[in-house]
Length: 429
Image (cartoon, rainbow, N blue to C red; front, side):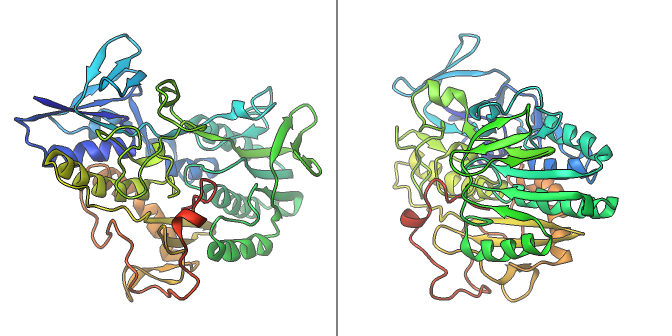
């Protein structure tokens, strides 16, 4: 019997297990999933926890609940991927061999990459919100905070869900206004980018929103050090920024096992073909989700689209056919803007976000690059779709793996060469 091994039981790995369990001949193939953690987190929900919109119960379930029957699930840490011998060594010393390997090991924050960041102030007046622990700690701080210098900081790209820092800023503004302390808050948004966002169309709109909400944008800020003893965040060039409460998005990196295995780049992301999702190291290794080095967004919607494409390509690979299915970099994302409103963007390698309707051209019900209440409701509804449809690999009506151009106000200048303009620091969504 041949063996297909999936590393990671997060969003991408779980979807692939469900897709392939329906496609592969069970007499010929055995699917195994390896992941060291038992808890599955709905990570987009972390954004809402600091403001008491979601509680822990809304974002936490058991990973095993979503692994299909017939799939072997091993809860162990991965030590090394031996691509030459097509084996994976686990931390307990055991080895798993494979005919096809799917890497879906995701990414995580690494605050240790910034000098001084994870010191005594960590989760006291310096917070992340990309972990359940950070989101809960920030919630506790905000419940009793009376105002001061509030700074939202983005370290570098790429990161998971690149719009999340802006969403946090917009939701914080709304929260402070509801608490009646907004006039006591000196609010800054610090980014290494030259504007509010990576995509210019979107940056224009969201940058205007920052101005409207009186949030000071500090662009081109490359952080060198955080001095928690003096509440200062220092750039390599220019003036330090003072804070009383700092919410930061640290460097995001791939799994350490990727580095140990010699399969990753400097940030431990796996070099992957832009369109086929085949690794550049070995023909029998495929990659999707946050583990790739692709210039597409590191977001759940992208993993969803990639899973559909990769399932077709793996079936082609097994049949000895050319990998014809092609991922176009498609991503879409709701962007919370506060006061129960949100934007929606839809784009791919070639086209930037533009106005239009989604998912049904000309009908919607969601409006692209527009701030509406129904977009906010869509953001909240997505949590239910995530648990009940997306993770299980069940098609979502009207939503296709490839971006639909019909119904969008595409014009000359909204498209671009993905290789030229979608570099590692140009991830979005």
